[in-house]
Length: 123
Ligand SMILES: [Zn+2]
Image: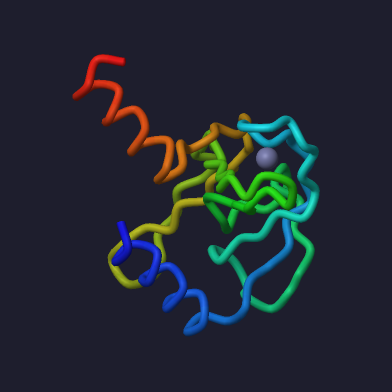
């Protein structure tokens, strides 16, 4: 538990940069509206990303300003092959259309621990 928290702090400091994600969703725990999401999957230069348009990132996150709960979403995508053409080097280039189908919340570390404890103790 302590090691996990130290690790996230350490990597946060090392990476430094992130992008903003324009999205609004309620905190799963307290219902507070969260609008200042971040992602480290794309450009890492404080760009504003629209999760419905950008296909270069897979997830975004924020901790709730009200209750501190970790909220994280995975971007659910759909890929359609549009065109396949020779790349001139004996292989192929694949042109794909990537569309965003929606967002799926990933349970936080604390939630996973709580669920595990419930399973073990039977509460
Ligand atoms: Zn909250």
